[in-house]
Picture (cartoon, rainbow, N blue to C red):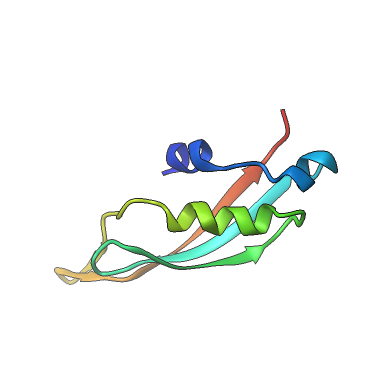
Length: 86
C-alpha cells in the first residue's frame, strides 16, 4: 500500500518552496467490497500536503475487506503519510 502511495504522491509546489515537511494522517474506510471510501484528513502539515494525501488514497486499488464472524465488514484505517524533502 505504501509503495503505491509514495509512487503517486506529488509534493505540492508551495510546500517545496517553503520547506514544509511533516506527516499527514488520513482516515479512510475499506468497505465490505474492499473499496476505499470516505478519506478524510485527521492531521495536516499545511501547504497543500493535506489535499494531496486524500487524492492519492482515493486512487488506491481495492483492498482485501475485513472479516468478522465469517462476513465481510467495513474497517477504518488511520494512515500516516510522510512528506519529506530530499
